[in-house]
Amino acid sequence: MYSITRYLTEEHRRGDNLYAKLEELVQAENWQEAVVLFKEFSEDVLAHFKKEEEILFPEFERTTGITMGPTQVMRIEHAQARELIERMKEYLDKRDKRGFLSVADTLMILLQQHNLKEEQILYPMCDQYLDSLELINKMDNL
Image 1 (tube, rainbow, N blue to C red):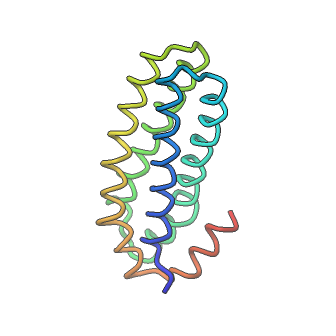
Image 2: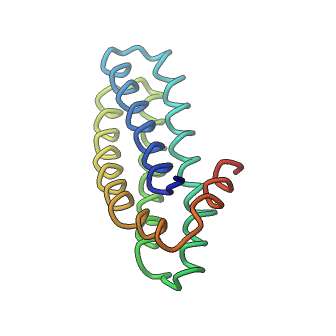
């Protein structure tokens, strides 16, 4: 069975794993590998946001008529995460371990709370009201 919840939760776990490896590299001050992995991590997170903002959220809003609810909150949190990712990059470019890890911790707390809301509330609602297979295919082709 195709499930938006399963599909996007797997993306969350992939991002979590990339983050954990990135944090280890920065802790060890392995800057060269950290820069490479940061690029992969940030591209992964931003691609996930794009799938939600360009495909999932508009379809959910169109189908349910709910425009001032969970999708609005998720967009605000995506914007906050983007800002934190930019700050992480600035600290990474400066090779500032303390600054990087401080901002990274803030990002991880935000993303963990954000992902929990999506996985427990929004995604199950999407599975209930939307054509999961069609949307997953659209997200895969974005």
